[in-house]
Image 1 (spheres, rainbow, N blue to C red):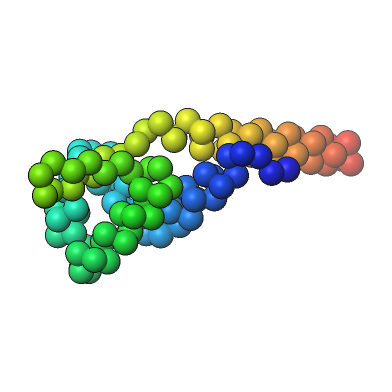
Image 2 (cartoon, rainbow, N blue to C red):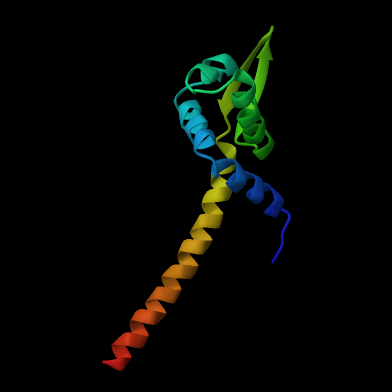
Length: 109
């Protein structure tokens, strides 16, 4: 089943599939940081970190604002509820399946 959220969900999971991007998200859950502050935390060029930030912005997980010549990055908590709903659906599905499997084995005894 394809719905209007599948592109969004694909972008979020793609963004979180990379360790550096997950770490950037974790940093931004603590406080808003500039691109330069984020770049100092990683052993890569400013351009490399900027590419990771761009992926996070495109996914909607990060919002960038500009004050003068400085770009600030902020974590966007809004999207967590959509992802949480999706994961809850998967959890409920597998829980039902595993309960049915338990029931099957109980009957076999």
